Image 1 (cartoon, rainbow, N blue to C red):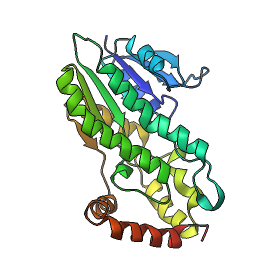
Image 2: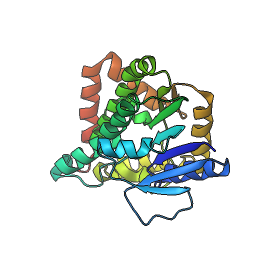
Image 3: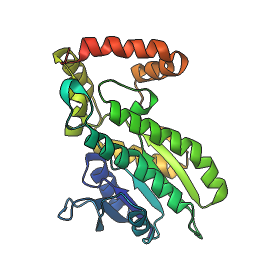
Length: 256
């Protein structure tokens, strides 16, 4: 029986992924900070803070075939006039970027007789910064850069370890409303239109699992043209992109 470890098993996508692999006959180790979770999405619950090297070695002790680093965090609270809070910044950076990077680095040092795929769940928001979810976007950009840059090094240093990245978009559910704490009424309506049209978690989980089985290094779920446009602007003309963010903040923020 193959073993998959999924962090963020209590989340919308994590739960859907867990149930998908259970139906396929896999042993699913669901990882959560909670010790009372019972959502039917795992074979075994691993309670972990997901912070330290020791936490990583608990993962590796299961001798998994796949590790899906799905746990993510958004800014549920913000400071005066929308400025990020320090404790939220520290926590988001750790969960979204630092710990997944640590998992990959520690795994690269182990000797294995079969492949281990380490799947980082990124975001299509990793293509450009945003004034409306700045800490989240920064952490996902860092994750994307780390896996794309360090992945080839690790794979040549340890042929059985593959660092891969999947970039899902919005998924229908409460977490899709995360950035609204900075939006005014107009911005809220724009966000609502996108969220209401977002796919269900079961559909996204199936697409992600099929991509994992394909062996491709990086995957993206239906990236909207607007995201592509912002990504190109950010890469090709960062000064103009910054000015566009200043303009967007004036138009879309409830603090102006």
